[in-house]
Image (cartoon, rainbow, N blue to C red):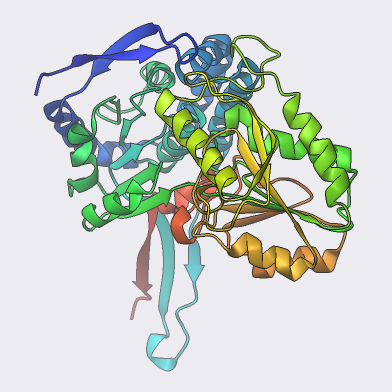
Length: 463
């Protein structure tokens, strides 16, 4: 295999090459793993206040380079500029939260005198870094999904090797540039765009203590190959949103939030609204308003601040979603909004009464499309929302506290959002799913917990 061959990064809107970055070979990845493994003790000894200072430096520098970061997102990911600016804000938030947590990683004092035989014994537990970590991130949030692995690792004292998505490596490399300005120990981090063969060591090498992967269902295969290391997976979903008979908000507000949830960054989000279940009493009115709102979404150049729907990551992805839309129509679904695909540009689509076995209902679309159906009872809506192989997050618009609590009890997902769409996320909250959506939780504090482990101390009183 050739070493460090160039990786072309394309402007997702124009299709032209935007830049080139180095592509690491397998030998380079192995060297990075060795360096991270050697750095594990230095990173564990790196004081918490120094870790905080590194993270605060990143917060300052990301703020200074915010326009550059947003522009890079707009080019390499095709993300509409207003969405790109929002992601830069979240990048900064995530590092700021991690800076605060770096000096709050605490343990506990145990009462061991629970019987006569343990009198005179004291117990304490502290949390220590697990060691070297490997991170693999996807194309759709090239900054913030990197941040949700890198920032907690620094706060926890874990060295790491990061493989960013080959289609969107630039943002991660800018983050690496900023980290290189800090006093982190030698070998504490490597950011290496590489192909899947070269990345195999990040999955299989036993010197890696934890693998954190965000991406598609291939994550389950990676887990099977990971050996004894800890594994966390965030594998997406086909999120449902329920609109109750008394939704607790105006239909105009709900439509605004559904449009955001389903079509934000062209639907290329793990918690994009894909399935919408609406009580029959409000269905006609909401259907009319949502149809008009989706049809009005502007598609075009992501550099234009008026653009809502930009390019999908590549033409193959757009073709797949378009094929699923056509398949659903042939199976009896009605298309309320949409248009003709041109290359990787796919107009926002809205369908109703999609059969439950169709790809648009069973799989993760990861594109600008949503499906809506009416329901008669809240229990029916909960059952339909649970009729999925995924379970990341769900949204519920309801004025009923009983229905809100029932949804929290019954929905088989990692998070239930009441009064908003499932696409809502704050960067300090536990985030992750169940079933096909993965295992473990991100969110800074939750990630730090995964990247540390308890170490017990028992002291016997002098005799």
